[in-house]
Image (cartoon, rainbow, N blue to C red; front, side):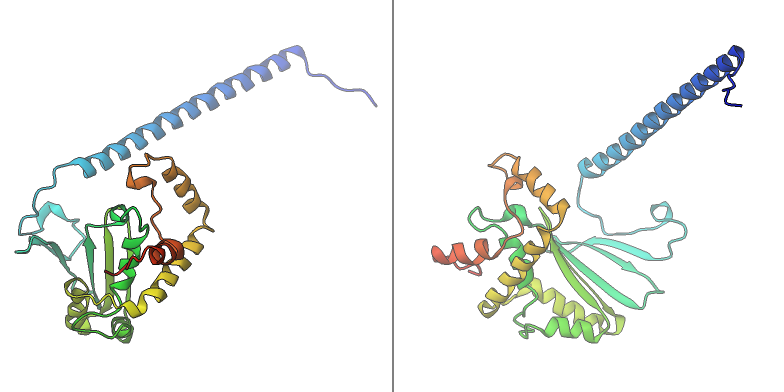
Length: 252
């Protein structure tokens, strides 16, 4: 008792060899994972580059079919270009109980004037507040809610996207109301302060998000002459206090 049993030298040598072999296998597996990861990342990057830089001609007036859609997709697709140059993609799903439509406007936060950061985001809010044909500022939201739908929008760097979903039975009037956003929005000055506060509230929420703060730091490192370096969300200072000091009307 009290004595420590030592392994024979031969056993200690075999154990060391096994450990070395396991270590080599572990390193080899690690290298293989790195290589596979690099290949997958490279393929993904190449696919993104192709999608972004491939030629974008006019969309032909065609119906999609054959190998252009998955075999299990029973929906009908049609792409066309209207007389005014607007590109349209229509999708028909016989099994759907609702209708959706969206509009992407090729103007985003990169188009903000230098002295009005957040203007495009503010205008996104204002479009929902009444049109010439449907002047009630709450009319669109009430109509969509009444027909079991939802609506929203977002302002990206180079585009602003509006979208809505509602019962198919109300699709005709819903589309007409939606389209009037882009025909004759009122930009009612009575609601400027309300929507400035809504934008300011969004900004206050965003600054609590670490990813938003990180994005802001990275953007601040860009060339000062580039819109990337600008403040894009907007707040009460940029959309109300500063314009008021210089007599600027944000809805003019």
